[in-house]
Length: 178
Image 1: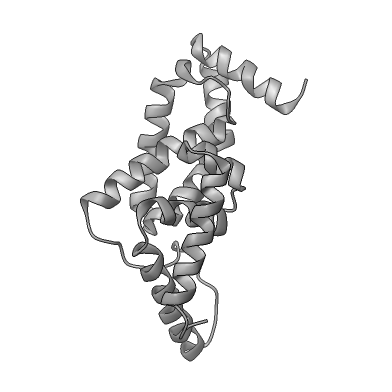
Image 2: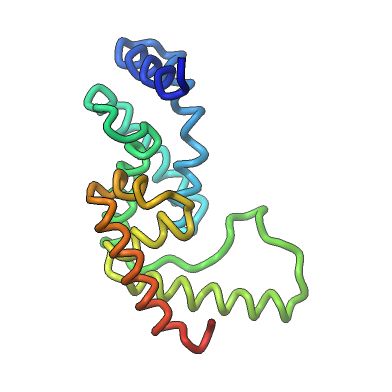
């Protein structure tokens, strides 16, 4: 049995009401989805709430999962849409690392790095949502162009163009930083 076949079987079991299968699916995908949503919110509490809402919605709609993309991509797409809706409703959040993940470094280096990160994040936040989502998913969250296409509901070529255009704009905006 391949990993995907095992996942498909767990999805079928979860749809039939098997709480253990559902718990196994959530346990398997929760952390990767959380990390991706962190890239959009940059706030631990917001990411926790958004991830929980993502899984609640995904569980409600699990029976509609067709298996065209991986389950992780499908769940992530639910979260990305929620994150984008939240982003449209308010101004950008402050830049920072999740608590407990800051590295030890000298104050000068830390300040310079924090300024550079803030500039990059500001530039990414200034991109249109379609370009920003593509670059965040591929460059920061580590998804392939195919996976990002599944998450964003568009063609892989579209994601490739969006990433290319986002990088071009970022190079222009950050010429003095990089």
